[in-house]
Image 1: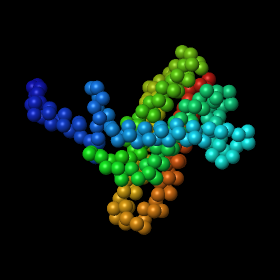
Image 2 (image 1 turned 60 degrees about the vertical axis):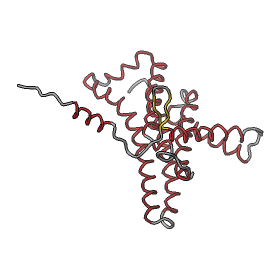
Image 3 (image 1 turned 30 degrees about the horizontal axis):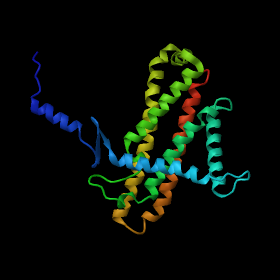
Image 4 (image 1 turned 90 degrees about the vertical axis):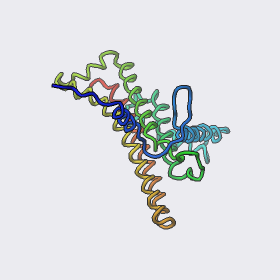
Length: 248
């Protein structure tokens, strides 16, 4: 039996195929790493909005909330209720900041893609879009959730947390381990796929019928974006709450 070695030309062709990208991207060189500049720019804008909004609206707090203070308190109460529902009354309080940050970042990111005219800003390569339109952002959020629910389980239950992998029977050990890999995959691809599909649909409709059809699609896209933020935050809270339970 003879084993043929691939020529260097074929190996180089395989390397070129593995580096194929969809669309164009603007890269920044930071040390030895290349980063997607357009994702960083839009992410910084989202973070700036999230930092500025509470700073402006809570500058003069009143005992009886009105106006923007009332809106901020309503958002906080909504996030607390969401976290309490998934984690229970005893465990939810330390996790309100994490779930709230994730929900608000995804929500504002999605809405920025649906409402802000990013494409008016011209870049040397690529174009600006919602941060959640990039798979790297959604994977990072999913990995943060994975780290959070591992930490929550170990902090709450110690090394007995790993006993869940052999419950209700050790036969299910491979499936239970596989579940921890499918959770971040599900979180990342669900958010990325829905946001990307929504923006592609709007882009196609704008190119076909520029004035009539895209206008009703924008409120629908905003609604879908809000639903995706709610689903992502709810699943993150549910996974963390599940890891702190006494059973799997």
